[in-house]
Amino acid sequence: MYTELFLAVIVSIDTYLAAAAYCNSGIRIPPVSAAIINLTGAAVLGLSIKFSELLSCFISLQLLRKTGMAVMTFMGMFIIIKSLVRSAAGRISGRGGISLKMGNASLVVRLYLDDTAADVDNSKLLTAGEAAVLALVSSLDSAATGLSCGFGSIQPVVTSVLTFLFGFTAIFLGNVTGRKIASLRRDFSWIGGALLIIFAFITCKD
Image 1 (cartoon, rainbow, N blue to C red):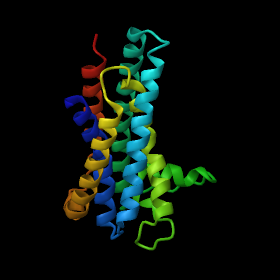
Image 2 (image 1 turned 135 degrees about the vertical axis):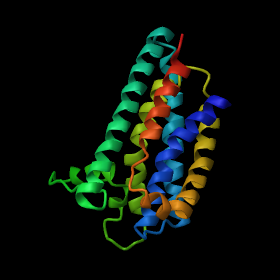
Image 3 (image 1 turned 180 degrees about the vertical axis):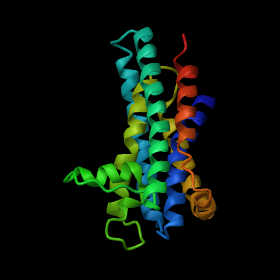
Image 4 (image 1 turned 120 degrees about the vertical axis):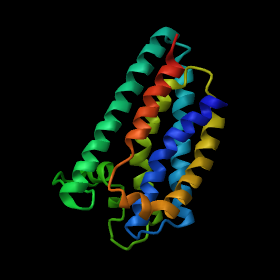
């Protein structure tokens, strides 16, 4: 249970920071949109863990552990670097976003650097469709994490339920503390990256 709790907390950190960013930008997240974000993230994480379990039937556990540790460590380092990039973008643009001319990929790039870019119509309301796009982009890290750690004793259903519940809590806390967090003018997503590296060594050690 502790492993599932730890993983749910790691995944929920990004949800909290996204909700805080929306609050600071005056963008409201309706309950339906919050449910879409959390359901998508929880489902993707649970399914990826289950798929990783199936892989363990065909690939040696030792190889899976080494690969999982390498992937999660890389992801953790990437998240830390992304946090530094976000902080730099915030100082340069004054709002934490970078717009690149890359055709249809532009929105995905902006979402990865600036969560509030999901409000594409600038309505100050995250619609169900916008929430679905944000959820899919945000769940990429969850999918990779689940595939890298599901070969152990992690229960996919328990993890999904905890992630869903923690996600709603994260959105609520983000709405409450968003402006205060934004006033610090720092990006704290590096915490999730650091915890992911710790999680990799805990779950993938021999």
